[in-house]
Image (tube, rainbow, N blue to C red):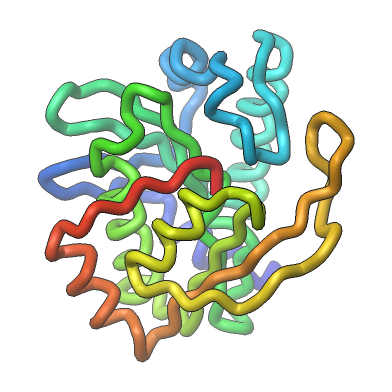
Length: 205
């Protein structure tokens, strides 16, 4: 598969002074469950996690996708507290085309607005461009998610357009998905913005 080698290379620990990202494992099931059962997290997500059964299906899919090389699923730990804060993934991996997506991003509510997402995004972008050699990193979010959209603009991601009626959402509406990207030539400027510590607070992208 076109993304298999990248998926294997990225299945490693990423860390700085703020956060640690490591590939998901079965032992993360219960720590993640303790922060995931909060419907506020999933307002703009394609799945609603309100019950143990829904969480287990979500977690099992993450393990399965990672085992197949379809996703690299990271568990995010906040360095200051040592607590698991949420998760983020490399997905839509297409090494042949030189592109991949950062998505499936979610944080427990008490970790939102604290810079955890900011530094996790920085580490993943750095991995994508400086280690994997990607030419393009893309993001998509709900067109209604103003906070996520502003956060992506804040780091220098370029808004590319809206794909209408992209996918169904819990509750019956169909989501319009808005795409953003960072290109290799833009990465030095984006990295400088992130390292300057400008606040980014996305949810559910």
